[in-house]
Image (cartoon, rainbow, N blue to C red):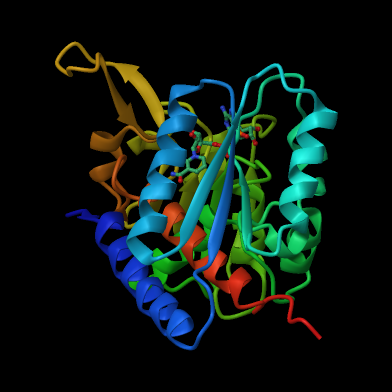
Length: 297
Ligand code: NAD
């Protein structure tokens, strides 16, 4: 089977252009530019790169952004106080807490401190709950970006068997919720697998649509999938590579060459899901600025 490669960079570029035009229109009507407040803790190089990519995208679409950086020794109380200040600041529309956090900081405690109306990552329990019951909400950016890819590439989910591997709060679980809801983006029979799943292949082999978000290179091989499957590889893993100047390269969770022999459509790593995550963050920040999800009464 000839595999088509999903061009996440291209689709994300189209989305960012739409957001740029919407921001221009919004500002043209006399409103201030939307603003994203990023919170970066510690010196993790990957986190710095991700925040850098997000602030660059903000600039491109006309969203103001600021990054507050803190040492990894910051206490829970200090960080909560900082978040509360951002919640109270009327010039800030969206708050982004870059994950992962140092061990002593528990993401759920801090995410809950973020005002759900500024939770542009879509991680707050209020927003996840609203997603689960089909109410307007900030949707987690990575799975929401994957649905945009399905729309662009005309991947129909209705009645299909979607298998999601990885059940994190930020990718796998919200992805499974979105695919399984009986609304226009979903209507798929959905299986959610995780590290306790016995005989993973028994599930992946049945997938018409396979979303893999684990963080384990070559977890999914050609023997584990059926002919014609659509594969979304969310994983981003650094593996050593003597040919690269940096000494490493980025790979996904699928053994790309072997799954390409059967998949009809696949996202590459890099250049697949990653750019879509950033584009959806821009979209959510604009929605927050417009009070579209939580209208002010
Ligand atoms: P996580 O570490 O929070 O969770 C991993 C999940 O995988 C867990 O549910 C765990 O049970 C499951 N798992 C672990 N080993 C497994 C196995 N052998 N079989 C089946 N399931 C297994 O992960 P996360 O934060 O969702 O990130 C997953 C990957 O996606 C990482 O590589 C991360 O870098 C990447 N990621 C990419 C983007 C993007 O925009 N492209 C966004 C977020 C995360």
